[in-house]
Image (cartoon, helix red, strand yellow):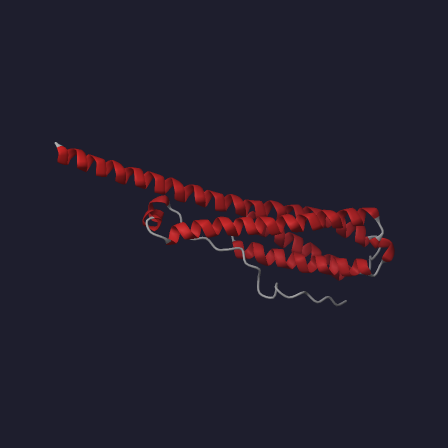
Amino acid sequence: MIIALIVLGVIVAIVGFVIIGFNKLRTTDISAQEALGGIDVQLTRRAELIPNLVETVKGYAAHEKGVFEEVTRARAGLQAAAAGDDVQAKAAADAAMQQALVKVNAVAENYPELKANQNFLELQGQLAETENQIAFARQYYNDAVATLNKLVMTIPWMLLTGIANVHKREFYDAPEGQQTAPTVSF
């Protein structure tokens, strides 16, 4: 009788551990997925602000056609990347958009009346705020991925990754060359 109770207690403990571990891995994975969605929201917000900025700048610098074409391509790439789950594609599209925005701002520097335009100033403020939110979303995602990866790579949780269908995720890293300031030439 005592042996049966001990065996039953061990079985209940093992089942309890599996349930707790499964739930812990799944909720941590969901948190990482949610954090990646936060990056998508901010990248999409930035992509939606860009046409307004470009239209404002176009009125002053219509002859800078190449800059506007680059912004359009970068915006399309950003929207496509935001629709997918590839973290590296998101980072590359983000970098392309950042480069295009640097060029738009360089054009604006050449037109003092544009720099004083209220619409332009407001859009620049919104973009700056969005850039801060993107940086925060990236950090939040990387924190969530770090938590998930620690669980996936350590005992006893790693024993349950197959059951929970949870695997290590990639961090949101800046693409090569993103660490240095871009150069702008017209």
